[in-house]
Length: 148
Image (tube, rainbow, N blue to C red):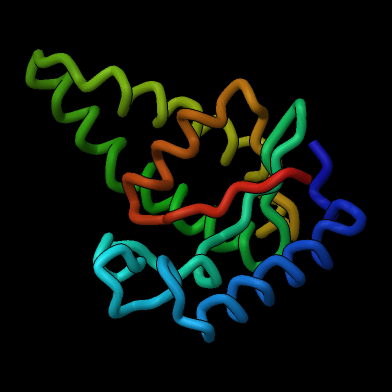
């Protein structure tokens, strides 16, 4: 797994967030915080404040500050969910299979980058994307997805 920023994605991320900010300044539709269909009414963040995940055939990639935001959310997810799973199993219960699958995928992803600091690029294999996206959304990390 490469940890260096993929060539061009940093610039593409910057351009995309600039376009989102421009739309938000126009305050039209979803970008209008006072609109009944705007992001505030829907309980969501403005697009310019969400991490961007670039999609390819093999993976989803977060770069720069977006990688950092995703890592914070994933680490919080493990810290919150792992003790709940252990407690549930210790008490003889069955832990939610979606949470368990997301926990395993998140732990595996974090283990691959453990000890390397916070990478500028976080690559999530497509095979585990749904579980990782579930973990991020559970922690309130709303994502923008776009093609790489």
